[in-house]
Length: 71
Figure 1: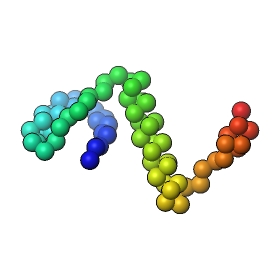
Figure 2: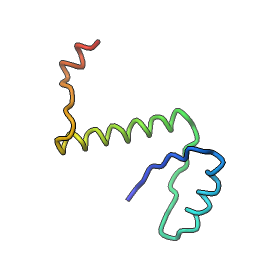
Figure 3: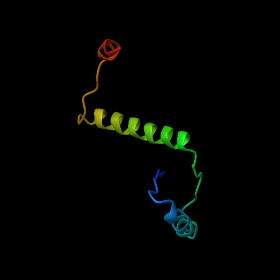
Figure 4: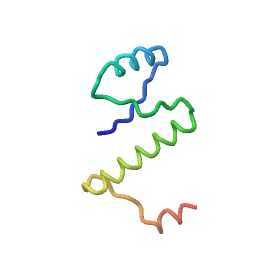
């Protein structure tokens, strides 16, 4: 399982990473501190969430025609 987290306060970041590092069943694959990359990952996670909601019938998406008409 993979999890994306956003640590809101930079002060707690070091403490959190120390705690996670002590868990032998957790592997820290990557730390992202760049704002642009972080925003991309957040947007991508939101996109996957939207697709999941659409597939379960909880969300209605716009058609390509509706999206083009917005421009």
